[in-house]
Image (cartoon, rainbow, N blue to C red; front, top):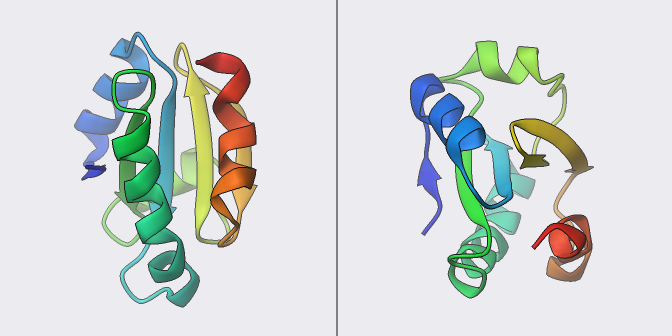
Amino acid sequence: MAKNLNKEEFVDLIKGSEVPVLIDFWAPWCGPCKMIGPTIEKISEEYAGKLAVGKVNVDEEGDLAMQYGVSSIPTIALFVNGEVKAHQLGAVPKEILEKMFKDYI
């Protein structure tokens, strides 16, 4: 299950993970975020052990959103060794998200 992360948990996850990390930048009032939420959960379950998945509520962690240039939500970002390797805007199909990380797992 994708955990909602605060700033410290986010930094620990992206810096300390031995596997790629998929982060969903979202907000509870965002319709497209609600649409992609089940897809994020499914990816979290299907790729457990190969991919870490987390969520960042941009209303609660605005500094993180600003730091990573998140100006539209949902934004899905892939981190490898603490660096952003890919990102995707909007509620997209699972297959599009899988293309982001397939080469890294």
